[in-house]
Amino acid sequence: LSSNELRLQTLSLRRNYGRYIFGRDDYIPLSILHLNVGDCEWSPESLTAFLHTLCRWKRPLPLALDIDHARVNSWSTVFSHLPLEGLRSVITELNMNNNVMDSSCFEQFLLFLATQSLLLTNSPSKLMYLNLSSCFVDKVSDCIAQLLRFFLMREIWGLSLCDIITPASADVMDNLLNQLSDIQGLVSLDIRGNFVQDSASQCLLRFVRDSQSIAELAFDRCGITDNDQLLYLYESLLLSPHIIAFQKPIDDIKPISHRNETKRISNLLKMK
Image 1 (cartoon, rainbow, N blue to C red):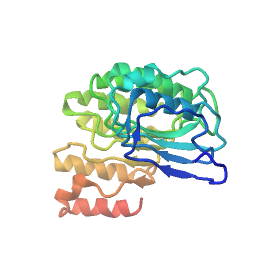
Image 2: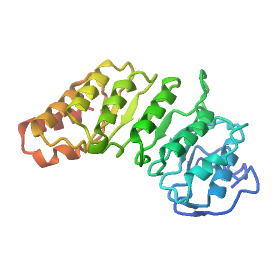
Image 3: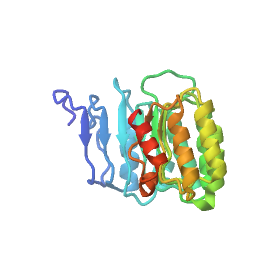
Image 4: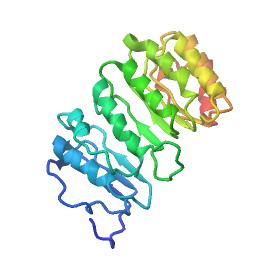
């Protein structure tokens, strides 16, 4: 794979075994634009070595990394043993979906993320998209607060935070939405599968109204049981002049597809 003649741009190694430590730094071609190592089985040592190898050298092109559903015993061990000194900012898109971290481990993850999202830089290789869906198991409020503090000082283009907020942590959604508009350059937001209470739905509408950058929204499976409230929320979001793209279809409105309001929403979706 390290041969310059291959000119590989996309490489998927999903559902493989990464149990051994990299012996060389040039196994990953500099031509790669998208590397998918999701759903692989790792030892903590091999995953630490992989991340270190990937980020040790400056890359001429942006790199999207999928490392979702990683089968590793301890993410905390991975990040605590990862030498951060000398790591280069090379990952522009990072998919960490379904990698469960507690609040202490998440704090270690953010230290690594800081090497990929440098302060006060316009580098084309800095992190611009992050997927942390289904990553938090305890102290969700603390993890979200840490994440918001991190990106209040940085720019991020796209953020996916699906399936994180449950009825037990419903207030966290209010805090998240109230502060998202302070994140610079946030264009795309995916918050499907999060429980939304009445106050959070108003926070979402206010965020879409006040944001200077948001244009793409993925919102569904929000847990609202009042059909009238549900229809009002979706219609209001789709009528926003800021939102030019909205995910389709919307599962929330399928059970009430017979209603005229739902048909109106479906027509609005066709315009996105």
